[in-house]
Image (cartoon, rainbow, N blue to C red; front, side, top):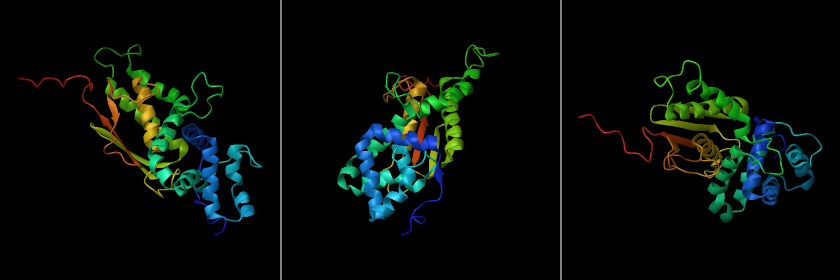
Amino acid sequence: MSTLSALHGKTLPVFFTQGYLDGLWHAVGRGQLSAAYQLAAQDLFPDKTIRDRWLDPLLAYFHDGTHDPQPLDYRFVALFQSGFQLNGSQYLRAARVFTRRAGKEWWFGEPPISTYQDETGLQKHFAPRIWTALNPGKFGAPEITIRTVKGYRELGIIGVTTFLEHFRQESEIDFQVQTDSNRIDIEVIECPFCLHEHDLCYVFAGIVSGLLDWLHGHWGHESTVHQYLTLNNDTSTNHRVVIDIHPYDLDSKPPAAAS
């Protein structure tokens, strides 16, 4: 295989590549991360000289390359999960958990007391635009009254769809979003993190899980208590994320039927 033919052809922007790698780093550790891409690359190119030259664009993200990080071909982005898969049963047992955790770590980014500045967290990057979309419908905004204020569910839907719109636009990841009164359905058409080579990639579910916790105020952990929008783990799959929109608070009884 030539080094050129091994590439996918589509690239992930630097900010999103670095953020995903930071999420994986927190989920599995830097040592496991490095071992995974090396194992996958060795499977493609046994010759070390050819392999190292081919890996140069990726090594820039580990401060080992000869150039600054550039948008990364999807094949390089997917090398990490390919490498974990080559590890066999150990990967198969843990993949769904740590890929989802990587997505959630990516959403929340570095905590305030981290010794590293948060430069790649999705929350920090997209929160100002989400707040901008939400605030006009809240008390304190011009012309908002008890009759015109938006409810929790409506604000939640605005928050989710605003993030997805900007995330898709900036990352250029191909996914579709359908929304009705009961659910928000996200279908990933082309996943840069695994190239759809297996069904154990739950990065998008992790991102959405973090987003929903943040929108509801349950920061840093999953909770369905008092959530108006919840991730449906039964109908969601690796590249389909389903968010249920509840007609009332999960802790409350439904409104009594009119007599």
